[in-house]
Image 1 (cartoon, helix red, strand yellow):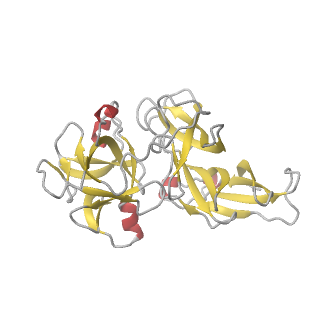
Image 2 (cartoon, helix red, strand yellow):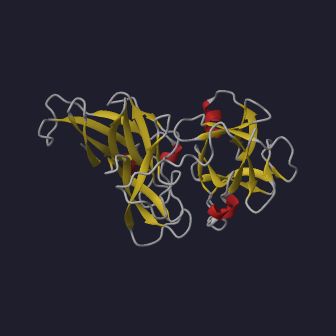
Image 3 (cartoon, one colour):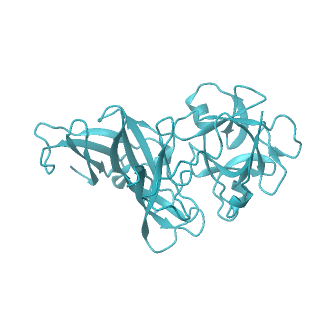
Length: 343
């Protein structure tokens, strides 16, 4: 096929049929890139007689930057999971996403945002495979660039990394340290480890304050020092699926924290796709170096990333809460302290 690359192999454990997946490198020719699949014959080296290729995915999300590549397919339960990479492999916006379908040739439903993105120490993770580990769990093998600061690529080429894959109750995978490459030491891959869980627990209530400050996030989207009743949020499952959360205003049931024109505010859910996207967040470990020291019983340092603008995080300008691209000079502004409040 014309412009074909990034081939990978898939054996369907139920039908015992073999397939090859590949990318059509449209982004290099200023047209959308797509992923395709076709059945192989019993030798696994030729297309099966009478088989046809199927287009199973195309680049249609803004955070894909016109690129879908590096497909890797696996079957788990009733779903086929298609892992793929997005963005430019040589840039910090490279990452891993996933889509799933109950049928091999689709249609595939994409996760709401990339499941593995740049983090502390590593940038541009991508082009993965997912395999079973000796301990019985799943691991992802991928490459990434070393990074001395957020969203910056250091010289020296790419490195091969391994991270554990955990599966949420909703069936979507979670990778590494809350969606970023694990920077610290991990137990050996043959040692089984339990999933420590999300830093923010669904159904529980929290308030959010700036690190080293007493200013709390209010329902109007501002950070202020007055501690009234409009600072408590209930963590809900993300209005868009895939290891995400939404924050419902505890004092205003049905209103959720969203970004609108770049600013934070609580609005009543209107059921629109735009609202679902604006009111869904990925929770990452606090971006500020050393923010783990703030973690204690009931308090955890977190950063909140927008799912429809994945390079944007919750921060502030003056007293107004906003979303903004990473400021590599001041990661402290991207870190919030979430305090659990028993209700």
